[in-house]
Image (cartoon, rainbow, N blue to C red; front, side, top):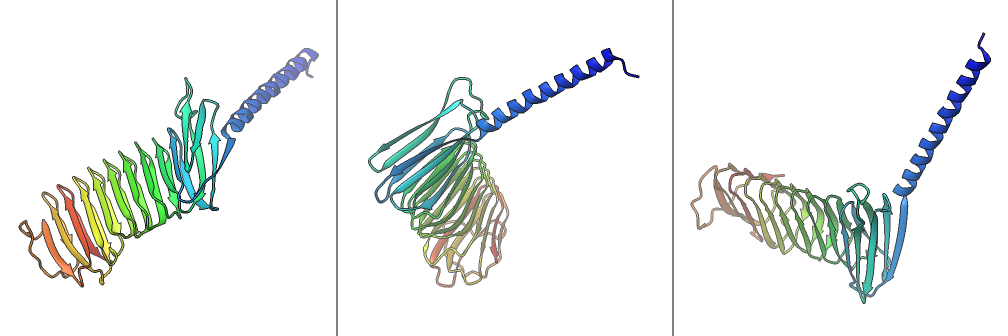
Length: 293
C-alpha cells in the first residue's frame, strides 16, 4: 500500500515532468517559428530588369514568372539577420546583413526569387545552393563554396565563379558560358554556344553534349581530369594535350597540323565531319578522355 506522502511525491514528480515537457515544447515551438519566419518583397520593373541577391549563408533559387514583376520570399532561421533591399529604376538589390553575434546557422536565409524571364540576375552565397532556371537574361553566380545549378537558359551569358563548390550546367543553348573554379568539379550537360570556357585548378571537368554546330570550346584543368563525351556525328576540330597525364581518344580523326608534337598517350589533334566547332582540352597532370557516346 502506497503512503499518502509517497503518492504526493509521485504526483509532484509528474507535475514537474509535465512542466519540463511544456517548457521544451514552447522552446521547440519558438525555434520552429523562428525557422519559418518569412518576409515577402515585391517590385514592379520594366523589360530586361537587373536583380542582384547577396546571401552570406543559405540558398538562392531563381525561376521565371510574370512580366514586369519581381517577387522575393525570404525565410529566416532567426532574428540575427536582416535583409536590406532597394530599387533604383530597373535595378533591384537585396542583401542579407548579419547582426552582431550571429552564427552561420542563425544567419541563414533561404531566398526564393521569381523574376521576368528576360531579367538578368547576379547571385552570391558563401555556402548555399545557387539555382537558376528558365531565364533568357544573363546569369552570374559566385561564392566561396556554393553548389551551383543552372538549367534551361537560352541566348544569354552564364558566368560562375567558385573556390570549391561544384558547378552543374544543364541545357544551356546559344549563350556565352564562362566557369572558373579552384577545386570544384564542373559538369556540363547539353551545353552549346558561341563560346564555352571552363578553367579549374584541381577540379574534374565533365562535358556531355554534341558541341553544337559552331562555337569555341575550351576546357582546362591544371591537375583535374577532363572527360568529354560526344556522339559519332559530332562536327569538331579538336586539340587535346596533357603534359604529365594520360590522353585517350575514341574518335577516328583526320590529322591536322599543330604547334606541338602529337604523341600517342599524351596529345592528339584532328578534325571530324565538317569541323564546325573548335574544341580544346588541356591539363597539366590530369587525364583527358574524348569519349564516343
